[in-house]
Amino acid sequence: MAAVALPAYTVNSPMESNRIDRTFKVLRARGAKAFIAYICAGDPNFEATRRLALSLEKAGVDILELGVPFSDPLADGIVNQLAAQRALEAGATPAGVLECVQQIRRDSQIPIVLYTYVNPLMVLGFEAFHRDAEAAGVDGLLILDLPPDEDGPDLEAVGGMRRIRLIAPTTPDERIARITGRADGFIYYVSREGVTGEQENVASSLGERVEAIRRTTVLPVVVGFGVSNPAQARQVASLADGVVVGSAIVKRVAQFGAKPEMPELVADFVRPLAAAAKEG
Image (cartoon, rainbow, N blue to C red; front, side):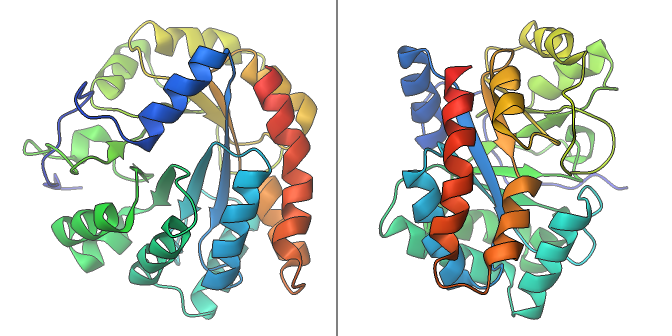
């Protein structure tokens, strides 16, 4: 893959903080951990996403990951794949996702991270996407299939948005330092190999891997991929700075999507997860 030149941003910038930075600062002062929820924007439609975002915040979600629907989500398991398919079939587009963020911003200041693949950004153009995303109220970008090596030499700031980086269980220690050096906001540790999806157990190597990452950065380290119940959320939070839950939530969106009260029903599922994570 050829190097992709992205708009400039300053990695690990200590300057003006955004909502992500402020949230982790407040949580650390309280001795609490972050609970991050993933949902696919536009599933089942953008109005439902807006309402769900507000309900999730009330249920204890600290940071919201909004998936940008894509036809070939290679890092996602079947639950998230189907969510993207439903959103696309309902007419979701990257521009529509940004408009949805604007609608959420009318009622909420919850930090929002866009979880996306590189192709949707290429369609709109990197500079235009970054400009429009920041204007809409996006706080961070997690581009799943664009590793730091492919960012190109001209990578500088995405304005005030944070560039979230992924680290896998198989990432060598020397590469961890290179990845964290090109990150800000927080580090997302993928707790297991493979795609997203609910798992029965937390990886036994989790604590060791989180510590290896912490030796290279002062950024918060959050853990996702496979966390699906309060016990797992509590266990992961005891070892990391935050917990990400996605597939288990998206599964409930699919289950309750046709009901007008879907946001409240999903929030009822999320509430004990968020509480458990904060206990960690």
